[in-house]
Image (tube, rainbow, N blue to C red; front, side, top):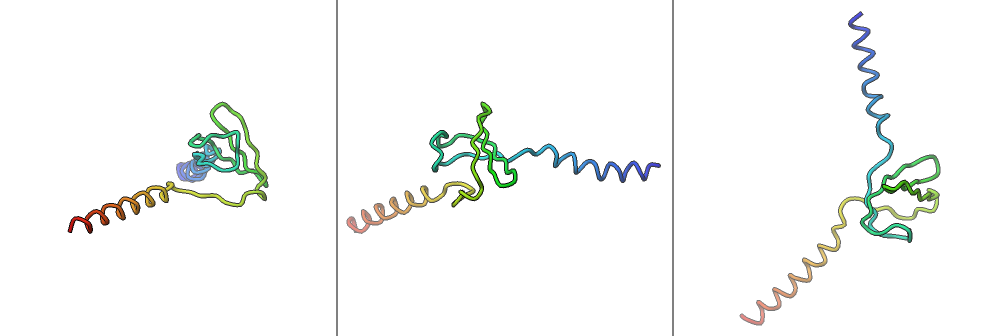
Length: 99
């Protein structure tokens, strides 16, 4: 009897964890959605051939999956890398003039 209970819990517990996920938390970093400001936190839901973006107030933006041309992920690092390269060029240039 205990063995059956343990087996049942081993199956049901992981299923309950997956049932709790109803999308992904994302932060909008700009693009073609004029109604969404950059930096807005959204929930991304993928349902069939549509992508739903829901904000905190419950407004939904529905995007057909076939119209998506680009998605980026992670931190937006290229801005910081460009700034670092600019600072390096300026600081090494000043060092050459002094020497």
